[in-house]
Image (cartoon, rainbow, N blue to C red; front, side):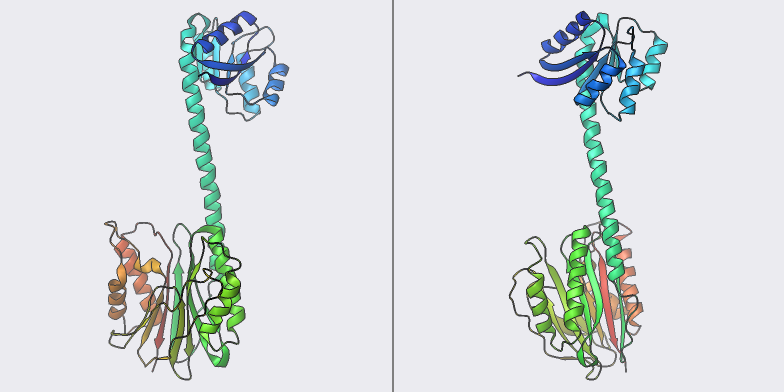
Length: 382
């Protein structure tokens, strides 16, 4: 089967052109060609057609290979350029190679033509593939930068002042920006909604879905008293905007400073924990429903009230903490989370949060994070 080849021949001799074409045809090529012998004709040929390769005589009455190379440069074209000449001195050949020619072949030794053409076509294909990969990388880097900026603008600037609770939260973004989200949302009767969420995927799409979820939550929670009803309403509108490949896991916990208690609902989010003053697990904040955006009409129920005694600590996390890995591919896991919290149980919410992050960083031994690390810590004071 013949191989198509679009070849621009810069040559003033028809006979030499036929010799080149015959050599290519014997090697199985089916060349589509145009012969030019001056700058104007070459410029017009480059405008009319995308060429796979250019083969040029070095010197012609009205043109030469160095001028032809300059035309290619000015056009920003990455087309392999091979000189085929009857006579060319070593100094001129070196000059041509420095100017961008890939090879030069003597007309008396055309057996080198086909191997040179095949090599340059392979190299050109490799360069195109590399440029595509580099372009994709630049696009991804810009997308991650934009997503990171969106996320950082939406995170709370400071924890709320809500006695008797000491609250701290932070999200440490991975290199590949994800869709983690945490927030503090005022609710009815002086209560505070504490939110931890994770949107599937990475990049701008995940960041925008996170921003949409935040907007719905802040709008619907402000006068709400029932966290289950709040998530039910949010899911009803969010499901209309989310495709089948994306969803949101979210835990909404309502802190009531009057009763010093917590009520929560969890849309498929990883387990949270309430630890006592001695570090014992007093309550697990397990999933109470499916992730948001999966089915459009699913009711979410609130948990019974969980009393928070002085010294109790609430841990709300995304799965980036639990699934952080060491160089030996071990997960950080729930037990290490609890051990770190117990080891700092008498400290402030901020100190517990920072201890968790430091422990994950030490565990991973500095290797890049694969997911965002997001934690909210709530301590009940006396």
